[in-house]
Image (cartoon, rainbow, N blue to C red; front, side, top):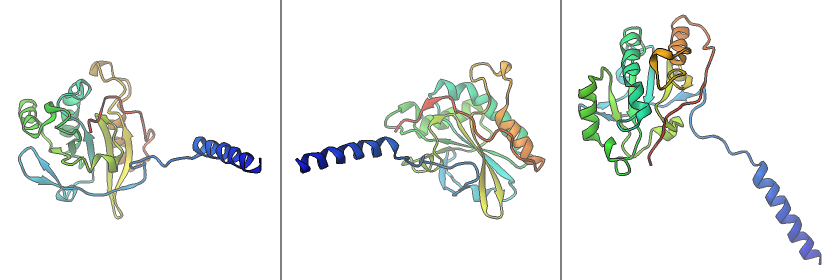
Length: 203
């Protein structure tokens, strides 16, 4: 009888623990220092954040070829690079998808897409899918704005580029631009995190 009561109590405690256990979320949080990486660009050369000696920070965008959300944002990503690269914050685009699961995101088709759209920034393949989990990216596109400091590249903003993926003309809140403008003025970023809207990363 005692054994039965003990077993029942153990099951109850175990069930409670299962529901109350808090698992740490994967990926970077605002304020974390992002580690560098070395990934192959569409020009077949390896690219690292350390290569950009004069940069004040980076606009790291996880994006891809096939996703309609990513495609809808391509021109805006190009515009971000054009505006902010000369101010010290270049775009670094990374394709996190597994080409074996999504053939449209193969390295060869990345090269085609970059040429078609005349990308002005590196478009890197996360070969082996090792970088995007470090960041905690879940969507394409998913943006991480980093600021270069004495301790490393500190994450200052995570989330969406703006508040309207379907119509650039209807955007009311330019989250990424607002964050970058604040950093360039040495001010605190007002909105540090938003929900990234896009396609799930293919693993």
